[in-house]
Amino acid sequence: MGTGVYVAGVGMTKFGKTSQTLPDLMVEAASKAFSDAQVATIDYILIGVMNAEEFTGESNVAALIADRLGLSGVPSSRVETASSTGSAVFESGFYAAASGYHRNVLIIAGEKMTHLPTARTTKILAGVIERDERNYGASMPALAAMITQRYQHETRLSVERMQGILAKVAIKNHYNGSLNPYAQFRKIINETDYFNSRWVSFPLRTFDCAPITDGAVAVILSADKKLIRVSGLGHATDTLAVRHRDSFTSFKSTRLAALQAYNMAKVNPQDISLAEVHDAFTPFEIIGTEDLGFFPPGEGWKAVEEGLTTIQGRLPINPSGGLKARGHPVGASGLAQIAEIFWQLRGDVEAIRQVQGARIGL
Image (cartoon, rainbow, N blue to C red; front, side, top):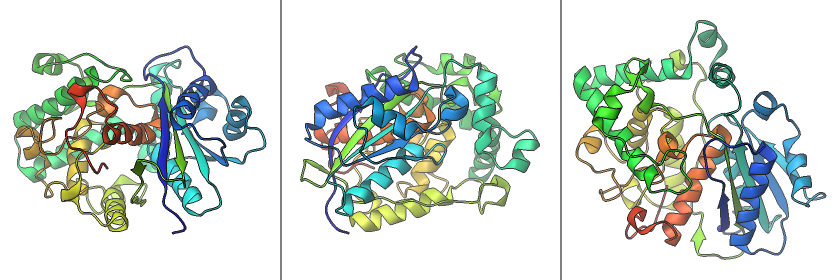
């Protein structure tokens, strides 16, 4: 590796429903990152957006945003990896800065979704599902529900107990989101709210599913030494077809990427102070904590019941509110997780939401 890579600055729009266009959101996030970072020049721009073509009818977004920022002439490229787009574009930015060829790299990720009917948005999102599974009617909530049922079976939990555990995840993340000024949902919910919410795909309810969201995030990475260093990262894939995977209750790509990141950073799961975990559906947070090595396979639910993953717990998970409450503008979500870790490590979040003694975030 050529050089160390540091986070110089971060900017984020409020997540939710807005009349702003996708370029407007990205420019706003970038402007905030510029103010935070105070860097003199940008050598490379990377844009993350999942599906601007279908959501907003725009393409060539990388050149568009460079132009809107007054940076025409600076190289600008686009990255897309479905729900992990924000993380993948950050990875590309990291290697660009680490190579020594680019001193300051501007990374922007966003999505504009709320202006479309829910049915249309759901169909666009289903495009990431393997074709045969999609043709047989599989949707993201349906696949998540199947995974949840299998997890319940393998852990020998009753339907009632599994529902109670999922409720705790949703309640925790909505509480965290209520403290986050950038979050789409800033409303605390309780068990009554959870169990009164409608079914989406059994055993998942509305409060188990991340919302449709508009938003953008920008991060500036620098080879110049700053307070927060990027010490390790990882990237892996699994079979696109869920039916071809080794396990229904573990995500191989998460396990492999985590191992790469830990090895690169020379840390282990026990060294992590807090984590932002992909919770497009509440059971995914539980499975994610197992795949990241925080808890043994099939035991992540115990950590939820014991309160270990709250802000005051042994290992705070999703202090931002997660995708569930902060919101899920698909292309931006991974970068929003990184922004939250940066703010937590720099001590910039609200006192009630601050993870005390945070040193290493994932």
